[in-house]
Amino acid sequence: MLSTVPDAVLLALLVGLPTVAGAALLVARPARGATATGVTTAAATLAVAAATAVTRPASEVALLAGVRAGFAVDGLSAVLVVLVAAVLLAALVVAAAEPDLRTGRFHGLMLIFAGAMLATVTATTLPVLLMAWEVMGAMSWALIGYRLDDRAGTRAGTVAFLTTRAADLGLYVAAGAVLAGGAGTMALADLPGLDGGWLHLAVAGVVLAALGKSAQLPFSFWLSGAMHGPSPTSALLHSATMVAAGGYLLLRTAPALDATGWAAPLVAWVGVATALVLGLVAAVQDDLKQLLAASTCSQIGFIVLAAGTAATQAGALQTVAHAAVKSLLFLVAGLWLATLGSRSLTGGLRGAARRHRVLGAAFTVGALALAGLPPFGLWVGKDAVLAATPSISPALYGTGLVAGWTAAFYAGRALWLVWRPTARPVTDTGPTRLPRPAVATTVVLAVAAAAAGLLALGPAPLRPQPAPQAWELVLSAVLAAIGVLVARRYAERVPAPGLLVRWLDLEWLAQRGLARPVLVLAGALARIDDHGLARVPAGAARATARLATLVTAHGERGVDRAVAGIADGARALGRAARRPQTGQLHQYYAQASVGFALLAALAVLVLVVR
Image (cartoon, rainbow, N blue to C red; front, side, top):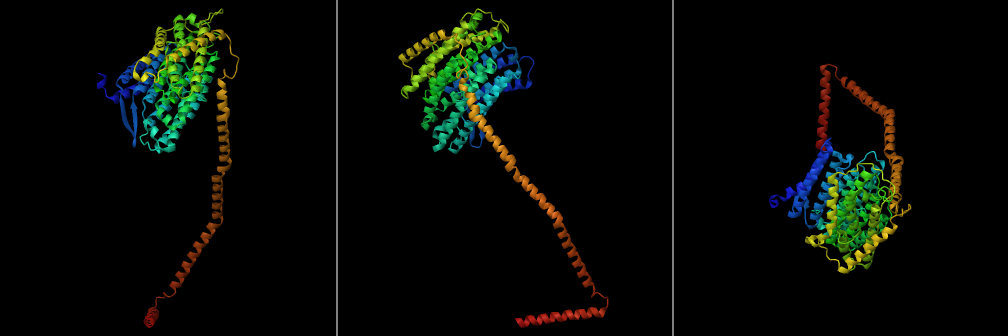
């Protein structure tokens, strides 16, 4: 049945279905039915995604002269298309628990974002990737600042947009380098074969854009502010899809990274450094969503590390496992926020798992998976990524182990606190009975998070190569268990405001080190333009006006005199010409005789000269 559907139709449905439905919801803004429409569209998108993952369609259409718009679903993108569609469906189902999210605007933005993400992971040429990449950024900005009365949220959306947008310029540089380097088709697969320095320039642009989108160091701070957005938005955009897009792009272009000689080691070290440093940031957060955001940067760091070590299968496994775990945790955090009105682990969320047992059980599965305990997916995924590092650099492996232990600590700390009993009553700010579909969705995600590790034994594209050895798996599991146990002792300690709590002041550094100098330079250039360059056309205008005045004052009188002189001369010639005209015949004969005589003399003179 599936084989009879043309590839182009399947791909058009995959990208177009959520995009068109989302645009319709965004324009129409229906008073009712937005949730049903959004969920139905997401379910249909998931069905199409599953079909494309089985049939692996590929198609191209003409875009520009010599440039094609290419889409394809292969071993790597097949994982991502199903992942994006599944998390979209889960996020929209859980969003129904929050009344202010049951709108056409919210569901429209979410669906358009999903369409852009699906276009991103299936794009085989840079122009298509660029267009989808830009739409993702725009939808992220709109969703982070979805609540228009939340000034902090709107500012966070602007910061996220400007930060990622600045990094996204790297893709434009990469596109120009691809054209200049001889890859006229602009296919991603042609990157390793670019001529000379164009390869290095193109790869540098790709790396910059990917690190910015995935909130890796030094761009991590934008993800902290993005937590002002609705929790379903965080579950979709900022844990499972958009931040994973950068890691996916690096995995997709891993051969080009390796071809440069410098990009692969750089990407690997940025990834492992982010995994460690942002893990430390997560360990000291009291705000649950901030903890999950920092842990997202940390876990995506392992995907980036996989790209730097060419461990594509391990990176894909880590992507799937992380998406299942983090979307679960974000959605549970959102439901707790809707009912308890708090995001503080030592405050309103203390004992939250006891109050909502099903959510507590789902959160427990997610937290244990995030900690890297067996047999959950992140345990296998993280070790599969690290298995490729000892042959490259033992320091990479050691740093990755420490980052893994840090993950166990912050996940364990959150887990102990949400289960710890509290003596003070909790004040509800929302319904105590949660919608059954939302609760059921968290249960499904918990099962997925628990079973994600089995993917390592599944299809060949997900089997990590090289596979982690038994001692590596045991060592990682022991360290994770120790991290969770140590977290129990320090869970109650409320971190004092400090550098780690403030996300290393990365936003402050970006403001002082980049934004402010750019604004100062812009102001200086504006002053030069206003007081310098602007004077050139103003001076030219004044000179022209003065010249016109001079011409008016002197030139016109001279012209008038010249015209008058010519007229006077003409009149004098006219008077002279009238004098011989007397009307007397003998005078005309005399004049003719004189004329003939002059002509005869002239003829004689000519003959003599010859």
